[in-house]
Length: 348
Image (cartoon, rainbow, N blue to C red; front, side):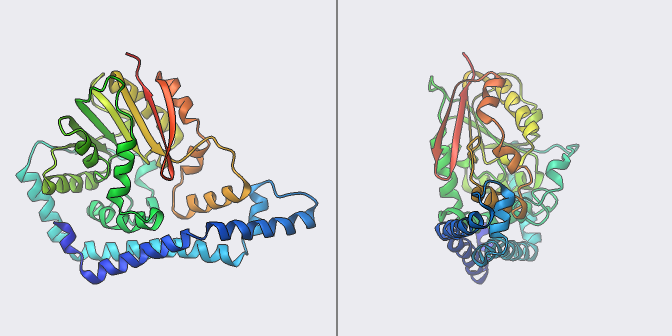
């Protein structure tokens, strides 16, 4: 397995990066208090309470604790990716050979499009600071697999696979309980595809993503673990599946990584490929809630420095309304860990 390619010193370094990020993430209460102290000084000077993002900048831009928090959050990620890329580069030939061997050993489960054209909104962004983004490096799958593990521990304190599995288990099944075919949209390296197969062992499970490097590594991992899932390269807003193909569709932390207009198109595509009575479940950031200037400030920094260029647009997006506009009924929202699970049913 590829885990064996990571030396113990490299793994220790990545654990440190994740721990450093998790440690600074625990400063939320202290940051809130620092803001409130600054807000009282602002109100005394201005004769009004802070009410805008610009006001929050005046209060926090030069606040030492906030500056330390932002530096640690950013630098820990940069350290994480630098170590991961170094490890991947050192093992590039072995990784390529492993993926190719899996494709030869178990054909018919990986479908790549040699003519696929990446949209600019995806191709040009280094999401979460991952060097080369999700598709520009042929080793992006391995880099994502190793790097996200440390990154996830830095957010929730949980290993990435354990964290992702919780969202899959929380996703509602179709009301009639029939699950024969499942689709994981924006599956990356299969973080939520494997748990879907574990949850529905008798179903045919597919994962789709735009990134060929991610999908090749996803296929390799599935073969090594003996998990029977299929992967295909396609844009979720223009799926090639026929109408009424799936009983259940799942998307995890996809929508905040794409423009809102693309998310609207995906919603309609999901409705098309679901069979009547099927369910679409999305776990992602909370949306539509009024936020304080302090909350807006922290979000703006995260979106800019993470980077997540479409996240602010998503937070203002009416996702539940998008379900209804596409034709879904029984639209629901429930909290799951630090995110929200929304779902809708295609009328039978």
